[in-house]
Image 1 (tube, rainbow, N blue to C red):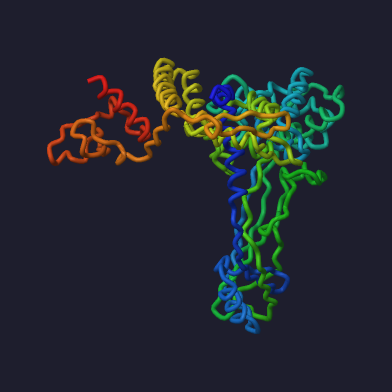
Image 2: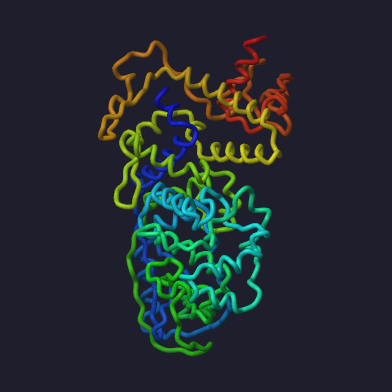
Length: 502
């Protein structure tokens, strides 16, 4: 158990995320499904029925449309805009570098720290993608000083007033430090990977003041013998900020390889003609192993998969660790051989899997709980939450955990050899325990009433009570003393302590 506790409150939930993903992949059972598509005038239409779960359903649909004409039932066009990507905070910079070049989080942290020490970029250990309003007047001068990028900055500077948007400037989203941007100092001293990283940051900074990318999205609906089909295409009408990335073939910002970006031929409602159907058998895919980039995102959002930038921004205060510590957390897990690298992917070692398996106390490996602690610590920094309340909550939680761990007499432990393999994962097989560990309480109905000893615990609107309250059992445990969100195990422990004293 001492080995478990030494990993710390942030390393354990991080390892738990990796092990959970490993188990999801190991336990995944692929399922066959069929997709029905058809090509009409070089436009690929997909059946709106979605995936067919059986080959018979799919074959019946294919037979139904084969040889029948396709008729366009509706064509709609909609203008859209795509704003420039947000400025970098440390996590998004580490994610981007891992995705583009396979750099580790620690590699990126060391390089950006070097750029900061050479005064070419601002303070790096930040968790905001915004700038404060007082930076706005300094933007023109920074852009003028970025002489290697004159071809991209001239247009912004010559267009008059530089745009100021809430997606870039927001005092409420900035505390001690702002997003990572160039300082305007000449980067000529940089070499190798430093220059590569600076270029990434510089383009992202310049792009923030470019116009939105504008596009026209076309959606065409079709009918074949009663079966509905849909085709979507997108055409960029104004590149806007994408002009900066037009020559950068490795940039994800220039990536248009998706089905919604296909260009559709001119289509009009009512037209009809032959088409070429295609039925493809596919299989569901397991979740992908974490890379350092996707793991950083999972740590940032306490294990939740979040793609939306604004939602991700709102969840940052509930993350595992801080931007400045996440790389060290991951490196420590590598060093202790609980995880290993397989190409860009991260894999849990046998020791890591055994370690998480041996920890029966869920709270010790809870990403959600760790995120809530981080949130409270940030609120303490801002003065909106009492440090004493946090400490008291923590003491109560630790007390409950210690009691449950002490009641675990299985004597389970793991030992790690130099290869990261686990040994002796259950010493209880060799040493007979003097008494059996008590089973965990997972439901309120398992908690016997301490007064009548016949009923079980119920949860009411303002207190816990006994299921035999109608028969006159007087048990009442107010939420002011027993929190309404206590787990059944914690509530059982608290009740036992209270009524043993009486």
